[in-house]
Image (tube, rainbow, N blue to C red; front, side, top):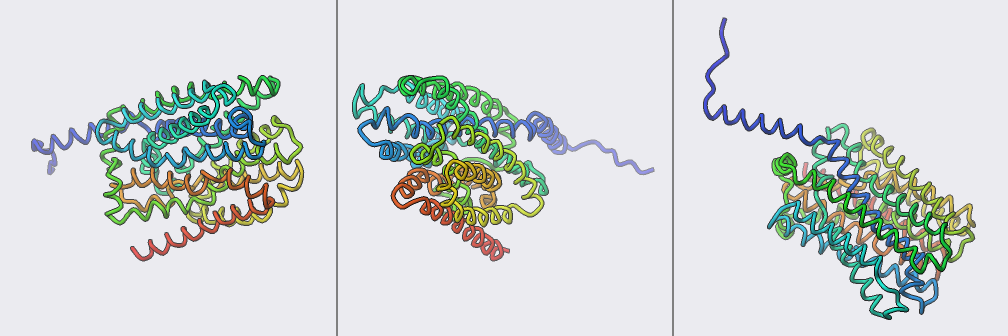
Length: 446
């Protein structure tokens, strides 16, 4: 009998040792743990932003813009709201440089400390009646700090999770990180709704509104430790390096010819991002100004809508694996386009019509947003995927969501709800065009 046993060559032994070490490390971090870190991290970020967005309607017009009418105060607050999205790409750039010079753990610690400090700073900020226009400047500065922090906190976990996913389950794994959005909104709207229902309007405006911002700081601490547990682990570092998910220089990505994928990825997600704040932040402002429902009723319907969105996000994973992620995103863009034609009628339809707008909008948001991440960013090579995915998200938020509440409220208050439908329709058209262009580029490459 021929024996295949032999004395290993020293190089073979070293290779075997590396393989065994990699196998042991791969057992340390599972896709489930990465998924949990993604959900916790995203939910904490969305909670911070939704707390600010809700406060733009319920608090800031009366605390920092009391010299304006309620409508003008909300528009001014929504202008401040947009500053974080403008600052976010700058935060991503700074964060990438910190990671290149030091480490991912250092970057995350600095970013989340800045986010928590800015959020608590808003909670402690004196009113306009106390310090005058300085209060507005401080509010703007703290909002910019929030945007810098969120941009700098990109840890690449969704990319790592996507590369772990088997080909036939990529849609399912892609939707996991997107669950952070409805979860963050549920917590933010629930906290605000509870506090608002327990206090008089004077008590709420005087001091009650500050508690959700303090809660945000506590959630950020939990999220920091959950994410540091992953990124500080040797197994995470080895997996990240083995898959080439490292922060390359942004200008190097542009010179490589892959910079166009940033805008292509942003436009492909524009329909869901345009819808994002039109069903979360905008309805509260519209219904407070022109509706009949109470604040707690509006927030209650929105929490129900966010729960439906959670289920819709999960459903989007199954749909993407069954019909294709690009097809799913394209079909949802078509449905959002059709929804835009019904928007004016629903917003004018009293409390019942406005509730239908919220619930149906959240359903479409879950189905579309569940697959909005990574459908086109998969075009990046591994070398640039980490940077490319981060900037694609930044540009998508800037183009699709940053000014959505401001534009929607201004247009609808001056020209009627039909303008909101037009805004949604433009986002759906951009998504379909981007998906079509991406398909053409893929065909050309092949």
